[in-house]
Image 1 (cartoon, helix red, strand yellow):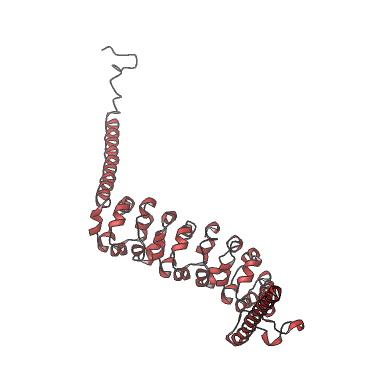
Image 2 (cartoon, rainbow, N blue to C red):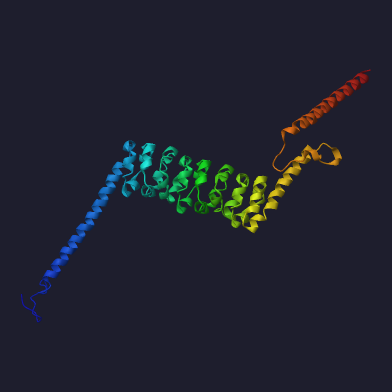
Length: 341
């Protein structure tokens, strides 16, 4: 091959001093490719192994010691049939890192008994995947709910709230409550659930949460209302105030918010209105109006002491109706008799 003007023989030759460098670079590139392929093969093997171990009835034999050793690939690979066949005690081995990797669709195979066996600290791992947790929320305890993080609290669904036992609400923190989806609370949260919230948790309620409540407000206690935020007080409706027990209204006065303190009178006015209706119902003094002897403290309703009076009034009414009926029948008989004559 002819030599060109620069002294090199052809395109296949390399620079005299570039041979070792080029060879070293080729070795490094090949080595890097092997490393990438090795990692990919390792991850594929891990995923395949995880799928083999977590995809079927074989999960029935898993123990807490085994589930505690699950890596992130195995936790992500757990499928619904595996959860369904797994013994509840096996759930006590799951870590927060493992729970964070649970697949949303697979979670639908978990039962309340299984949820109840997960260690409280592992609940820190729940995230948006908790949205798929429905009736299984019935197994949650206060110790577990106290570990929920904000992003998990914002993913609760109505089915979960409805199924959850009232005692579990006592574990919710202020940050958790502040992230509740208010559109899920209107028809799901009951007065007993509300009564279990700690004063600190009640401080996390906002105006949108409270605006949806009517009869639920019956669960408010004075110690809770003393901690409620001004924003939540702003969202309270008159229907909510009417359901708050009279003894709980004093909590507004203890609140640090002037707006909340201003709700004390409207709260008590609702109780006084109910009391006036009771007095009018029991009035027996004719035009003189309700008898002072029937004045009831707000919220006490009809006591046992009024039963004799109610009985007498009812008895007099029955005799009056019976006498009127007999008198009408007698008149009709006499009229028929004299007409026939």
